Length: 163
Image (cartoon, rainbow, N blue to C red; front, side):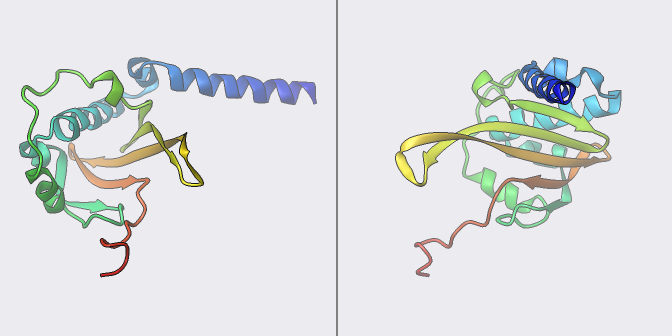
């Protein structure tokens, strides 16, 4: 029984250590193709989401990308529309700012996972904050994202459901 507890403790400590390592160390055990896919995701995050450059969408997202976020349609057109309302950051940052860096990022085969640490008001007590994790998961084919998942839930209708 003591040995089992020791193994559980060791496993938990290993997981904590892995998630606290810099991204470069996390990618050490990945194949060259997995490292390339991870770089693709981090570059998309930096150039697209952080810097807001719509012109890079076709570089990263397949035109017929399958979107598993219930608030987004398939393809990359809706994302292009979303970016039209943003003012691009110039120059594009050379690295992801520390406050926008994923807490964990890795690739396995054709899949890339980015995990984010978030904080929000506690719905049961808005005077308090709580921490949670969110994620983005991409499937890569031919150097582009062809499928995307995230932690999004369906947004309520505008106007509080009174439309």
